[in-house]
Length: 89
Length: 393
Image (cartoon, rainbow over all chains, first blue to last red; front, top):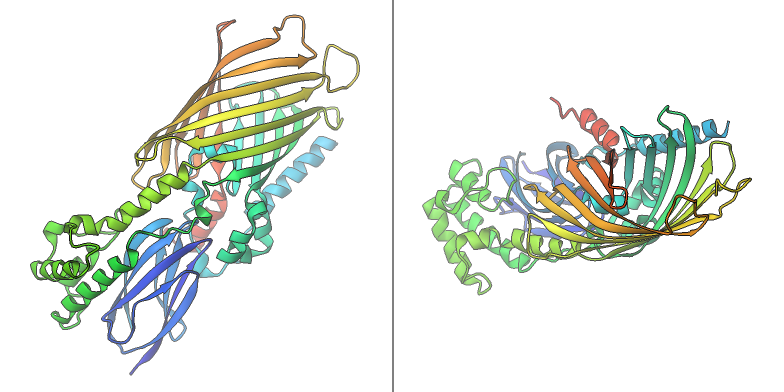
């Protein structure tokens, strides 16, 4: 059964992020130059998200929600980052 | 009465700054932009808030509160943090308001000062610098392709320890466990090498060079931004213990410029400063502003040590200042006076600095020292957020 999974990338000031989700059969990598949310239909299972980018003011966050319920979160440090986040749908 | 009034105003300003804004949970971030700036540059232009207790052990204790106009405005309008609004609010980002109360050695009230500062040139503000990293898109393509292909050989099991090791190869330095080239699963190393060869941008790089390529690109760019000039002008208005307004006026300007581009661990900042102060001439009757002193300072702030996160943790500033008494000179004074000045700054925590100021008068041979405590920022707010988020669990 597929579920609506949303990926929310948030930060203050100026920044950008490139996000990939593995396995990537159902979602292409995407880039965001401002805070935003993308929603995907994902099968139940384990996933790994990778985010790479720069936020220049106060760090940022990545939140993964399953039908609106937060299932994983990651704090991003200020400056350059490339980090993984595991989640289960 | 007026001193109490000012104290209340001071407390209100502090409260307004620390009062918790109802931010959504995903705004719970504790790191700050200003943390990467030098302690010296935070004194010249405060990014958000600064609380300070000056001359802790001396006869001129002072309590300072500084806030950028943006930090005050954002307390009532959090949308100012959004990138577009934030970038647009150039004046508010570069305008700082300060309140200061001075006490004597017996903790008796001496004076209040309200100050305004504006950065005419502020090219070192990384918060509005759009970092475009060299070949970032290509770097991500290599990462995506190599991880995806490798994952298929592991039945798409992202929890497989080999895949986790492969994924962690792409972690930035200091974040989690970054897998070294030597510890990469051999099959993944082959896949990654093949992907690298497909992109002319990287086919001459070793795996380690590719791994750190974006970090290096960011470090180089941020070094260039940190060294850009900062030029501020300021005006301070002082009222004394007798309640009289404008018992002192001060107009000043400061200039900062980083000097070394290619050193991630230390740096040197040129610091120039000029001030004109007008105070009461105590030799004449009544209240006036007839005693005028013009001062210039030229020196360097040496960022001796930065930590792994490129935050300055130890700084020493040294220079010469010249004081010229324009008017109201007292009988035991000389018209022009040179002094040597130095400040040692130690960063105790992310937000807390302890500056130790030293002044040397070569004519009298006197050495004076002042120790202070300065907190750049809403550390109370951050602590509340940290506790509210249950980070201590």
